[in-house]
Length: 275
Figure (cartoon, helix red, strand yellow):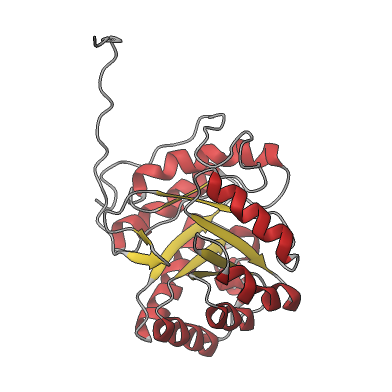
């Protein structure tokens, strides 16, 4: 016996065509199913704790896990961390571009690089692009308002949508100029209006998967409050992208993998943007 709840069917969201990249065995973009992704809150150098949390996230439904690489000790731990989990590990590299090469050599499924960390050195972008292309490892160029290139801040006065977009598209252009196309793109700002506006142009102008996100590291509550930024951005993202969940929420806690978080008002990106 079927029961009609009297509610209208949820309309299908048009997909934004994008290139497909592959993080280990998990496809991202190009019409692939959305993959839940989260980040560990452990010190990556603590291999045991990081592997335990990775296992918890996997059991809760995550298909991709990200670990922070902000020190040489973190980089040294990557070979064991990348080898043992059953889900692909992404190295989220902070501050030191040389750790990108360590992550690739360690066997990480993908890397995330902040353009603000490699400013003033196009040669580093070239080296990273060539290394990633040679290894067949995708990369996310993750632009953050808090670490935007000082040259862009001087030109735009602050971290405006135009400044964030300029940083992201410049890195894309540099990487493609060196034969590397396995990119995902993200731009982050604590203001949802700025974040949504900053995604409109990449969504319309490039075919790379977009990874929406508006949060920064820190206590759970502010990150849950910022989660609606991602909900507003979702129509601009290829539904085959990666959906981030709040870090440190715990595999079964509020905002954990695949679990809803409180919503707040945020401007919606037109569904036709980049479609």
